[in-house]
Structure formats: structure tokens, C-alpha cells
Length: 222
Image (cartoon, rainbow, N blue to C red; front, side):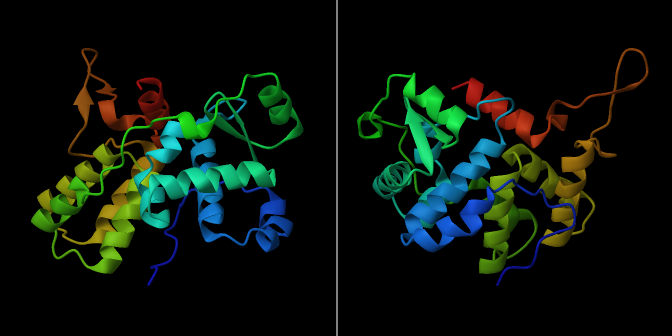
């Protein structure tokens, strides 16, 4: 059972037709999930247009868990393009708007079936093991909350929040979630990780980059 949306949960923009005519038309659950996950990826991209590379989607472990395989993800993406929800150009996907359609039309297309992404490895996240080792039993509800957290925050944040909860001997997910929500707003400058610069002022901890900044950096590094 879902525990509800925590205070300060980030909202993502969803085009209104997706919740009306498209919601009625999309009969395939995999296509629906894949399109929703695309919107999440697009929301992490700064500037315009909001390109999402196919490798990011095909190697998305959250989407692989939700749909089942890379083949299913690939088919769902193709279905979304065929429907007209997305457009594709050179291995990148964009929401099908007039401007994005023009950009895609001016770009030589690359067939997604010819793309060989990094394989998705179906294995338990290290965050799960860290939680069990330091906090307590990993129940199905907590596992779902950890998966949602991994889709929202950098893994380093989750690991640091678990460490802080352990050091303060407050061993429950609610406390960890509160830490992550605070860091999303203020950056992870907690009492435990304040740094002092040469000027005697608090320095910026390496992990104080926002989740969006972290994801952009990771995407650029590929």
C-alpha cells in the first residue's frame, strides 16, 4: 500500500491531453508507463528542447521493473512514437509538439531497434542492503518507498541520509524521507556534513547539487 505523497514532493508537468483523450486511447499498460517515465526524464533536462536519449530510457531500472524487459520498453517507445505522443530523432526522444516535430523532421532519424544500450542488470539495489544492515527489515512497503526515492534523489543522497539516521539512532524510513525532502529544498548541508572554507565560512559540500544538477552531470558524463 502506498504511504501517500510526502510534504514537499516534487510535482512534474504533464500535458493535459495525457489525462484526457490520451488516457482513454492508450490501451497498452507498457506504453502508458513508458510515456509517463519519459515525462519524468524530460523534467530533469534543463533548457529547450528537452531531449531524452533512448539509452537512458532503455537502461532505466525503474522502467524495467515496471514493464519487464528492454524489449518491452523498446516496443512501448515505438508504440508511443506511432501514436504521435513522442517523436524520435538520432536516438533521442521528444514530446510531440509542433516545435519538437520540426526539430525531429530536420534531424536524420535513427531506428531505435538498431541501438544497443547498456544491459539492465536485474539485481537488488545497494541501497536496499544498506537499509537492511543499518535500519531494519526491508518490508515490501519500505522496498517500494526506496524505489521511489531512487527515482527522485541521487543514490548518494539516500546513502548519506541512511548514514545520518543511523548515527542519530533514529532508525525508520520516515526520518530518512524527511532528511531527503529537506535536502531537496536546501541541499544536504546537515550538522554532520558542514565544511569550513579558508575564509571561515561554511563551504558547499560536494553533494549539495540538486537532483536535477546531479542527473544532468551524470547524463553528460556518459
